[in-house]
Image 1: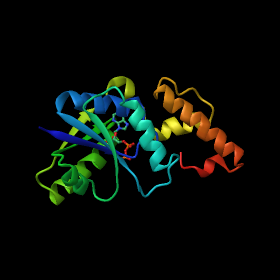
Image 2 (image 1 turned 90 degrees about the horizontal axis):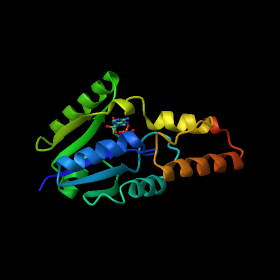
Image 3 (image 1 turned 180 degrees about the vertical axis):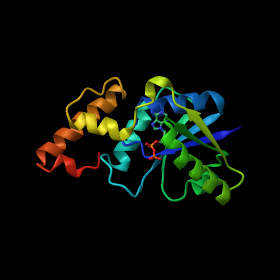
Image 4 (image 1 turned 30 degrees about the vertical axis):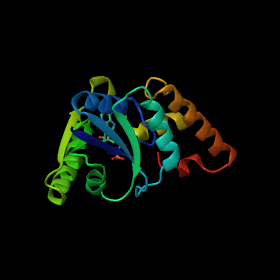
Length: 172
Ligand code: ADP
């Protein structure tokens, strides 16, 4: 039984993430999507909101589970008995970051393998930050995220507007 962890912030989850987790779920017995709950950056959605959006995205996929975590990813892997860390690669500039992280994780925990999936061509430009930026500026994100994420973005942006806070105060 091979369990893989797909870790990330998922702020919010988009079709690029869904595709990577779904492809990993065909290769491994179980995929745990790990929603990192204390990233060092300002996020648009709370950990609970991000978790709920991810859970809804994989509702129909039997071997995909969603869990929140904090701390070192390799420690979480040991906790849930995951032997593999799954990541996605979009463009060449992702490579250095993923490469460094895979090497650091291998140093910390040599038994855990990093497996990197190359994005599908149509998802190359997709990132959570571009989704947030397009949504904040009123663009249509329906081809980039599942419908429930689109709705959550609309709601969140309206909430921010109601609070009269500066939308650009959000890291986009
Ligand atoms: P983090 O919070 O670790 O910066 P994200 O939550 O944005 O990362 O993404 C988690 C993982 O999904 C990363 O490995 C990232 O490279 C990958 N990913 C993000 N967008 C895409 C995409 N469009 N296609 C393939 N992989 C992607």
